[in-house]
Image (cartoon, rainbow, N blue to C red; front, top):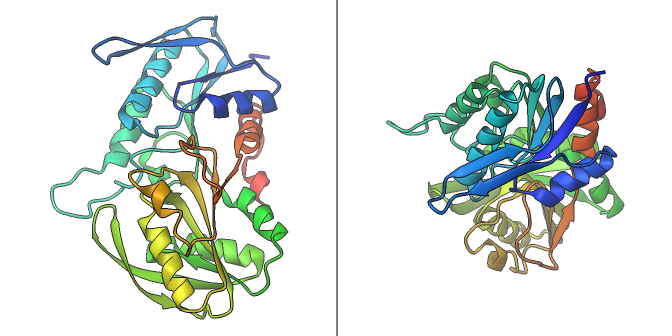
Length: 309
Protein backbone atom coordinates (compact mmCIF):
# COMPACT_ATOMS: atom_id res chain seq x y z
CA UNK A 1 0.00 0.00 0.00
CA UNK A 2 1.07 3.62 -0.56
CA UNK A 3 0.91 4.51 3.12
CA UNK A 4 0.05 7.87 4.60
CA UNK A 5 1.70 10.44 6.84
CA UNK A 6 0.36 13.17 9.09
CA UNK A 7 2.09 16.55 9.28
CA UNK A 8 1.17 19.65 11.27
CA UNK A 9 1.72 23.37 11.24
CA UNK A 10 2.26 25.32 14.45
CA UNK A 11 -1.31 26.64 14.88
CA UNK A 12 -2.51 23.85 17.20
CA UNK A 13 0.32 21.38 17.63
CA UNK A 14 -1.18 19.66 20.68
CA UNK A 15 -4.36 18.89 18.74
CA UNK A 16 -2.29 17.41 15.88
CA UNK A 17 -0.40 15.22 18.35
CA UNK A 18 -3.70 13.91 19.73
CA UNK A 19 -4.94 13.08 16.23
CA UNK A 20 -1.71 11.22 15.46
CA UNK A 21 -1.94 9.38 18.79
CA UNK A 22 -5.47 8.22 17.92
CA UNK A 23 -4.14 6.95 14.60
CA UNK A 24 -1.26 5.15 16.38
CA UNK A 25 1.12 7.08 14.13
CA UNK A 26 4.05 9.38 14.90
CA UNK A 27 3.56 12.98 13.80
CA UNK A 28 5.82 13.35 10.77
CA UNK A 29 8.70 15.79 10.90
CA UNK A 30 8.51 19.17 9.19
CA UNK A 31 10.51 22.22 10.22
CA UNK A 32 8.75 25.59 10.04
CA UNK A 33 10.98 28.67 10.34
CA UNK A 34 10.15 32.37 10.51
CA UNK A 35 12.72 34.88 9.33
CA UNK A 36 13.26 38.12 11.25
CA UNK A 37 11.12 40.03 8.75
CA UNK A 38 8.19 37.63 9.21
CA UNK A 39 8.67 35.45 6.12
CA UNK A 40 7.85 31.78 6.67
CA UNK A 41 9.85 28.85 5.35
CA UNK A 42 9.37 25.10 5.72
CA UNK A 43 11.42 21.97 5.15
CA UNK A 44 10.09 18.40 5.08
CA UNK A 45 12.54 16.26 7.08
CA UNK A 46 11.58 12.83 5.72
CA UNK A 47 10.67 11.21 2.43
CA UNK A 48 7.04 11.57 1.31
CA UNK A 49 7.44 10.27 -2.23
CA UNK A 50 4.28 8.45 -3.30
CA UNK A 51 2.61 8.91 0.12
CA UNK A 52 -0.86 10.27 0.89
CA UNK A 53 -0.30 13.30 3.13
CA UNK A 54 -2.59 14.91 5.71
CA UNK A 55 -1.63 18.39 7.00
CA UNK A 56 -3.36 19.45 10.23
CA UNK A 57 -3.51 23.23 10.52
CA UNK A 58 -6.24 25.52 11.85
CA UNK A 59 -6.22 28.98 10.32
CA UNK A 60 -6.97 30.67 13.64
CA UNK A 61 -5.17 33.70 15.10
CA UNK A 62 -2.70 34.74 13.81
CA UNK A 63 -4.79 33.75 10.79
CA UNK A 64 -2.50 35.12 8.08
CA UNK A 65 0.62 33.38 9.47
CA UNK A 66 -1.18 30.07 9.94
CA UNK A 67 -2.70 30.22 6.47
CA UNK A 68 0.71 30.92 4.93
CA UNK A 69 2.20 28.02 6.89
CA UNK A 70 -0.42 25.70 5.41
CA UNK A 71 0.20 26.94 1.86
CA UNK A 72 3.99 26.73 2.21
CA UNK A 73 3.90 23.24 3.73
CA UNK A 74 1.62 22.17 0.88
CA UNK A 75 4.03 23.52 -1.72
CA UNK A 76 6.98 21.79 -0.04
CA UNK A 77 5.12 18.46 0.03
CA UNK A 78 3.92 18.76 -3.56
CA UNK A 79 7.49 19.45 -4.72
CA UNK A 80 8.60 16.39 -2.70
CA UNK A 81 6.43 14.09 -4.87
CA UNK A 82 3.61 13.38 -2.39
CA UNK A 83 0.86 11.32 -4.04
CA UNK A 84 -1.98 13.42 -2.56
CA UNK A 85 -2.32 16.22 -0.01
CA UNK A 86 -5.36 16.62 2.25
CA UNK A 87 -5.66 19.82 4.27
CA UNK A 88 -7.20 19.05 7.66
CA UNK A 89 -8.40 22.48 8.79
CA UNK A 90 -10.27 22.12 12.10
CA UNK A 91 -11.03 25.88 12.12
CA UNK A 92 -11.47 27.40 8.65
CA UNK A 93 -10.57 31.08 8.97
CA UNK A 94 -12.16 33.82 6.83
CA UNK A 95 -15.34 31.71 6.56
CA UNK A 96 -17.51 34.60 7.76
CA UNK A 97 -16.74 36.52 4.55
CA UNK A 98 -18.76 34.14 2.40
CA UNK A 99 -20.93 36.55 0.37
CA UNK A 100 -21.26 40.17 -0.73
CA UNK A 101 -23.11 41.59 2.27
CA UNK A 102 -22.32 45.16 1.19
CA UNK A 103 -21.15 46.91 -1.98
CA UNK A 104 -17.47 46.61 -2.97
CA UNK A 105 -16.45 43.95 -0.44
CA UNK A 106 -14.52 40.72 -1.09
CA UNK A 107 -15.76 37.15 -0.82
CA UNK A 108 -12.67 36.09 1.08
CA UNK A 109 -13.78 32.52 1.77
CA UNK A 110 -13.75 31.93 -2.00
CA UNK A 111 -10.31 33.55 -2.27
CA UNK A 112 -8.95 31.17 0.39
CA UNK A 113 -10.47 28.21 -1.47
CA UNK A 114 -8.70 29.33 -4.66
CA UNK A 115 -5.38 29.72 -2.82
CA UNK A 116 -5.58 26.25 -1.26
CA UNK A 117 -6.30 24.64 -4.62
CA UNK A 118 -3.56 26.61 -6.38
CA UNK A 119 -1.05 25.46 -3.75
CA UNK A 120 -1.85 21.83 -4.56
CA UNK A 121 -4.42 20.68 -2.00
CA UNK A 122 -6.42 17.67 -3.25
CA UNK A 123 -9.01 17.49 -0.46
CA UNK A 124 -10.18 19.52 2.56
CA UNK A 125 -11.45 18.18 5.87
CA UNK A 126 -12.96 20.69 8.29
CA UNK A 127 -15.71 20.96 10.90
CA UNK A 128 -18.73 23.25 11.26
CA UNK A 129 -18.06 25.72 8.46
CA UNK A 130 -19.69 29.05 9.20
CA UNK A 131 -21.79 28.51 6.08
CA UNK A 132 -22.18 25.09 4.51
CA UNK A 133 -22.27 26.51 0.99
CA UNK A 134 -18.54 27.34 1.27
CA UNK A 135 -18.02 23.71 0.19
CA UNK A 136 -19.20 24.88 -3.23
CA UNK A 137 -16.31 27.37 -3.45
CA UNK A 138 -13.98 24.41 -3.97
CA UNK A 139 -13.56 22.24 -7.07
CA UNK A 140 -12.12 19.45 -4.89
CA UNK A 141 -13.84 17.22 -2.29
CA UNK A 142 -14.64 18.91 1.04
CA UNK A 143 -15.70 16.97 4.14
CA UNK A 144 -17.54 19.30 6.54
CA UNK A 145 -17.89 17.43 9.85
CA UNK A 146 -20.40 18.16 12.62
CA UNK A 147 -19.37 19.21 16.13
CA UNK A 148 -22.81 18.23 17.41
CA UNK A 149 -21.52 14.65 17.64
CA UNK A 150 -19.46 15.47 20.74
CA UNK A 151 -21.94 18.00 22.19
CA UNK A 152 -24.85 15.59 21.94
CA UNK A 153 -23.54 13.06 24.49
CA UNK A 154 -22.31 15.80 26.82
CA UNK A 155 -25.74 17.45 26.95
CA UNK A 156 -27.50 14.09 27.37
CA UNK A 157 -25.33 13.26 30.37
CA UNK A 158 -26.46 16.47 32.07
CA UNK A 159 -29.98 14.94 32.37
CA UNK A 160 -31.66 18.31 31.92
CA UNK A 161 -35.39 18.50 32.52
CA UNK A 162 -37.45 20.75 30.24
CA UNK A 163 -34.58 21.11 27.75
CA UNK A 164 -34.86 23.69 24.97
CA UNK A 165 -32.31 24.31 22.20
CA UNK A 166 -31.80 27.93 21.16
CA UNK A 167 -30.27 29.52 18.08
CA UNK A 168 -28.46 32.79 18.92
CA UNK A 169 -29.52 34.30 15.58
CA UNK A 170 -31.64 33.62 12.52
CA UNK A 171 -28.65 32.34 10.56
CA UNK A 172 -28.11 29.43 12.95
CA UNK A 173 -31.67 28.09 12.88
CA UNK A 174 -30.88 25.05 10.69
CA UNK A 175 -28.01 24.04 12.99
CA UNK A 176 -30.13 24.45 16.13
CA UNK A 177 -33.10 22.64 14.60
CA UNK A 178 -30.97 19.60 13.73
CA UNK A 179 -29.53 19.54 17.26
CA UNK A 180 -32.98 19.91 18.85
CA UNK A 181 -34.39 17.12 16.69
CA UNK A 182 -31.66 14.75 17.80
CA UNK A 183 -32.31 15.60 21.45
CA UNK A 184 -36.09 15.48 20.95
CA UNK A 185 -36.27 19.00 22.39
CA UNK A 186 -38.14 22.19 21.50
CA UNK A 187 -36.35 25.11 19.84
CA UNK A 188 -36.39 28.89 20.26
CA UNK A 189 -34.67 31.71 18.39
CA UNK A 190 -32.89 34.76 19.76
CA UNK A 191 -33.64 37.64 17.40
CA UNK A 192 -30.83 40.19 17.33
CA UNK A 193 -29.81 43.20 15.28
CA UNK A 194 -26.12 43.64 14.48
CA UNK A 195 -25.16 47.32 14.34
CA UNK A 196 -21.58 46.72 13.15
CA UNK A 197 -18.95 43.95 13.06
CA UNK A 198 -18.27 42.22 16.40
CA UNK A 199 -21.14 44.04 18.12
CA UNK A 200 -24.68 42.75 18.58
CA UNK A 201 -27.90 43.73 20.31
CA UNK A 202 -30.42 41.15 21.45
CA UNK A 203 -33.97 42.21 20.63
CA UNK A 204 -36.37 39.45 21.69
CA UNK A 205 -36.92 35.74 22.14
CA UNK A 206 -39.07 33.80 19.66
CA UNK A 207 -40.51 30.90 21.65
CA UNK A 208 -41.23 29.88 25.26
CA UNK A 209 -38.30 29.62 27.69
CA UNK A 210 -39.80 30.21 31.14
CA UNK A 211 -38.84 27.41 33.51
CA UNK A 212 -36.65 25.77 30.84
CA UNK A 213 -32.98 24.76 30.67
CA UNK A 214 -31.51 26.29 27.53
CA UNK A 215 -28.70 25.06 25.29
CA UNK A 216 -27.48 27.75 22.88
CA UNK A 217 -25.89 26.20 19.77
CA UNK A 218 -23.52 28.03 17.42
CA UNK A 219 -20.56 27.28 15.15
CA UNK A 220 -18.19 29.74 16.86
CA UNK A 221 -17.83 32.20 19.70
CA UNK A 222 -15.70 35.23 18.90
CA UNK A 223 -16.03 38.28 21.17
CA UNK A 224 -18.74 36.45 23.22
CA UNK A 225 -21.03 39.48 22.92
CA UNK A 226 -23.82 37.61 21.12
CA UNK A 227 -23.80 34.57 23.43
CA UNK A 228 -23.65 36.54 26.69
CA UNK A 229 -26.40 38.97 25.64
CA UNK A 230 -28.51 36.07 24.42
CA UNK A 231 -28.03 34.28 27.76
CA UNK A 232 -29.07 37.44 29.63
CA UNK A 233 -32.20 37.83 27.48
CA UNK A 234 -33.13 34.17 28.04
CA UNK A 235 -32.67 34.51 31.80
CA UNK A 236 -34.84 37.66 31.79
CA UNK A 237 -37.58 35.63 30.12
CA UNK A 238 -37.44 33.07 32.93
CA UNK A 239 -34.92 30.43 31.76
CA UNK A 240 -33.54 28.35 34.63
CA UNK A 241 -30.07 27.87 33.14
CA UNK A 242 -28.21 28.68 29.94
CA UNK A 243 -25.42 26.55 28.47
CA UNK A 244 -23.70 27.47 25.20
CA UNK A 245 -22.20 24.88 22.83
CA UNK A 246 -19.88 26.47 20.26
CA UNK A 247 -17.49 24.42 18.14
CA UNK A 248 -14.79 27.05 17.56
CA UNK A 249 -13.50 29.04 20.56
CA UNK A 250 -12.13 32.11 18.76
CA UNK A 251 -12.49 34.13 21.99
CA UNK A 252 -10.97 37.43 20.87
CA UNK A 253 -10.87 40.81 22.59
CA UNK A 254 -12.54 40.82 26.01
CA UNK A 255 -14.32 37.48 25.44
CA UNK A 256 -12.83 35.73 28.48
CA UNK A 257 -14.00 38.56 30.72
CA UNK A 258 -17.51 38.54 29.23
CA UNK A 259 -17.88 34.78 29.78
CA UNK A 260 -17.71 35.41 33.52
CA UNK A 261 -21.17 37.01 33.28
CA UNK A 262 -23.54 35.18 35.63
CA UNK A 263 -26.21 34.83 32.91
CA UNK A 264 -24.12 32.17 31.15
CA UNK A 265 -23.81 29.03 33.27
CA UNK A 266 -21.38 27.10 31.08
CA UNK A 267 -19.59 27.37 27.73
CA UNK A 268 -18.77 24.09 25.98
CA UNK A 269 -16.29 24.25 23.09
CA UNK A 270 -14.01 21.90 21.16
CA UNK A 271 -10.23 21.93 20.78
CA UNK A 272 -10.15 23.12 17.14
CA UNK A 273 -8.53 26.33 18.49
CA UNK A 274 -6.21 26.39 21.53
CA UNK A 275 -7.72 27.93 24.67
CA UNK A 276 -5.54 30.81 25.87
CA UNK A 277 -6.89 31.24 29.41
CA UNK A 278 -8.25 28.79 31.95
CA UNK A 279 -11.80 29.55 32.98
CA UNK A 280 -13.99 27.35 35.24
CA UNK A 281 -17.00 28.05 33.00
CA UNK A 282 -15.28 26.73 29.86
CA UNK A 283 -15.46 22.99 29.15
CA UNK A 284 -13.31 21.71 26.26
CA UNK A 285 -14.36 18.55 24.41
CA UNK A 286 -11.84 16.98 22.03
CA UNK A 287 -12.68 16.29 18.39
CA UNK A 288 -9.23 14.77 17.79
CA UNK A 289 -10.63 11.19 17.81
CA UNK A 290 -13.26 12.24 15.26
CA UNK A 291 -10.66 13.75 12.91
CA UNK A 292 -8.43 10.71 13.34
CA UNK A 293 -11.25 8.40 12.28
CA UNK A 294 -12.06 10.62 9.29
CA UNK A 295 -8.41 10.58 8.19
CA UNK A 296 -8.41 6.79 8.42
CA UNK A 297 -11.63 6.53 6.41
CA UNK A 298 -10.46 8.97 3.74
CA UNK A 299 -7.24 7.04 3.25
CA UNK A 300 -9.07 3.71 3.02
CA UNK A 301 -11.81 5.16 0.76
CA UNK A 302 -14.53 4.46 3.33
CA UNK A 303 -17.70 6.48 3.97
CA UNK A 304 -17.27 9.57 6.16
CA UNK A 305 -21.01 10.23 6.31
CA UNK A 306 -21.46 6.93 8.15
CA UNK A 307 -20.00 8.57 11.25
CA UNK A 308 -23.03 10.87 11.48
CA UNK A 309 -25.85 8.55 10.45
